[in-house]
Structures are given as structure tokens and as C-alpha cells.
Length: 493
Image (cartoon, rainbow, N blue to C red; front, top):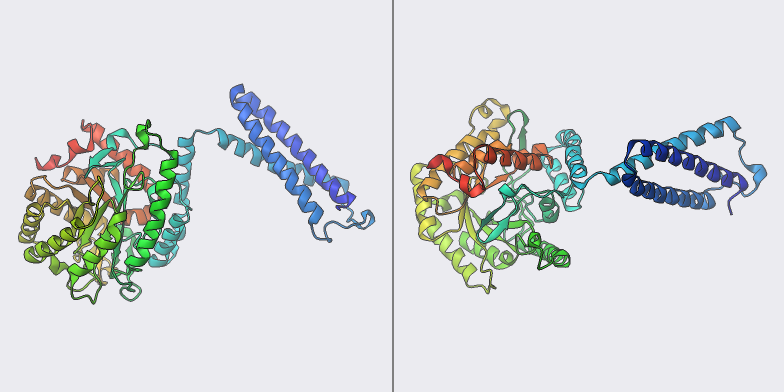
């Protein structure tokens, strides 16, 4: 049982808190309409009760050096000191309660905006870490839900239908960030219209030796030579299966057949999931690796990607040749189509190409894509070139693929060429150097139906996502477009 001294402290603190709450209530009542005071006072009252309960419990079971079982052994504290501490404690808790009460009445959109803006404070911390350690930590944070969740609806002008899927916005996260599908739910929750995981290889492999990721912060770029480091398709399939079931259950429990907003974007709920497939470094049959990926992972994917454009796997880019690409796509399409599918049919199949291609290479790829009715192309992967001003940076001598702002013009030119060569018949995903809504808009005008980020997200964090979407909506409205589809390829007409 608590001593009289401990109880006196407890009741004195409760009294101070009560005075603080009454003072806060009177102050807020002068500042706020009466209809807003009720929920605030109820919130404050609940917190006050919880604090009192916790204080009494901790007092009754606390160490003997704080609460003696005999009243005579209690430490003697001057009355003035006790009063000052009580007032300070009461005022502090009163401010916390007032702040909590205020936040509880702020509309969800404003509070959500605060959370995204607050993530900017964390960016300097990540900048102090090694690039790969920072990346690992970011994925871990997203996988545990330690990231803001977007509660605000996307601007209606950004919504679009592609491959029979409804995208709430065209801004996605490219492959390479979440290689092993650890953080799908957290990343989609941040407001991306779609997230692409991978590249996933059939057999686990470590990739190239470290260090293998290098920042060029001043240029807003990154050089990486990871080399398809992957936990393998079995580990990724288990993870995607668990997430798939969870998302479906949550969506079905909250959706209503009468609610149009509850329509699924992808197989498991809002947000589209892409799976990027790669080959193992030592594999002699590349097509067999991609086929294995299709058989194991396509049931969870809203679209599949054949990655033949990474510069960090020896011989991979040779698969972009006309004959090699045609044979590869045919085998992968056949593997996908021979599987059992429901009413929605098989997932769309895309190919991701490099930006370092000649005009003849692009013509060959376009011919294969049109002839085999490929569902889409992603343009583009990283570049082995070092455009200005990267070539002046000492880090530019590192081997690997360059991503970020310096890649923008190069990838955009390839995007325009491919849009013209395919005559706009195939949906294109523009990727490379996007760091603003204006950049995303330029990709769309160059022929992209969807766009993807990576490097800018690594530097800017979650706060970048709502900003890009808002800027993109402004660009469309500024030029008189009523939808994304109206703007696609506007610069190529």
C-alpha cells in the first residue's frame, strides 16, 4: 500500500492537473465555438483520467526509495518546492492535453499534411548514413508502418484506367527500392498510384560487392551497381501471399457494393502492384528464369515486367536485340497464358529497356512490341553514360548505372522516340529523373501514360509524393487538359 506521503503527492498532482485543465478549458471556450468544445473537453477528460490512474498505480508499486511504507521515513520536501513542482507539472500536462485536444479536432486532411511535412526533418539524418544503410532503414520503416499514411483523396483529374485497372494517380515507385516486397502496404499507403517491387531473381543472390551505391547529392543523382541482389522468388512469393491476403481481407471488410469509391484498383485492393522479374547472374537460360518468375509470382501481380536493361548483370542488355527479345517475350507470354486465370485474365506483361540504345535498337524493340502485342514498355532504366554535370564529379568514375536528374533529358528523348515508333498504341511508363510535378507532366506530354520515381524519392522522402501529385494536377489544369489521357503524347502530335 502506498504511504501517506506518496498519496499526498499523487492527489496534489491530480489537483494541479485539474486546475490546468480548467484553465485550458476556460481559455479555449473564449477562443472556440461551443460546438467544438465538447469533443475537446471529452478528449482532455479521458487523458486526465488515464494519467491519474497511471500515477496512482506507479505510486503503489514504485521502489521503496521513492515511497516508504512508513510516513515518518518519507523525505521532507519544502512546501514551496512542492507547490512549485506541482504547478510546473500541472502546467506541462495541461499544455500536452490542450495540444492533444486541439489536434483531435483538426480536420484529417490538415493533420495528414502536417505528418508528410514533418518527414522532412528526418532527411538530414538519412543523409549522414551510408547510402545502402539509409536505403535499408527506409525500407524497414515503410515495412513497419513508420511512415505517414495518405488519407486525402487524389485530385480527380489524376485518375485513369490502364489495362482495365483503375489508377487513382499515375505516379508510381519504380523497381529497385523495395527489391524483396517487404514494404508494399506502407509504400502504397503513402499515396503512390502503383508500386513496383523487384527485380526478383529465381535463386537468391547477394549481388555485387559493397560499396555499390554512391550518392551525387549536388547533382540529385545516384550511381548503383547492385547487380540484382535478391532474396529469390520463394521468399518474395511468401511475403506477397501474406500481404495479398491481408489487403483483400481489409478491403472486403470496409467496402460496400454501393460505394463506388471502394472499387479495387488492383487484385488485392486500392493501389496497383507491379512485379519486376530478373535473371540470375550465372544462369545460362535467361528465358527459363523469367518463366519461373511468372509461374511463381504472377498470381499476386497487377502487371509483370521483364527487366532486360540493368547494366549491372553481364550480358543482360544483349537480350534487347530484335531476335533475342522476340524469342524471350514469346516464351514468357506463353508461360503466362497457359496458367489458369479468372474473369480478369492474366496480368499485363511489360519490358523495361535501357536509355543507351541506338535508333536501330529502338526500331527493333518497337517492332517486337507491336507485333507481339506487348502490354507496355518502361522507359527507361539507368544509364552507363555520364552526362554533364555528372562527368565533373569524382564519383562519376564508379561503375554502374546512373539515375536521377541528369538522366531526365536522355530518358525523355527515348520516350518520345518510342511513342512515335509504336504510334501511341502501347502504354508507356516514363521513368528517369522525375523530381517535380512539372517533370512528371513533361514525361506524360512526351508519351508516358504512367510515371515512376526512385532517386528523387530517396532524397526527398514521403513529402515529395503529395507535392508531385498536386503540381501535376496544376499543370494539367493550366494547359486545359481534363484528364491524363488527353495529355499523353501532346508534344508528339
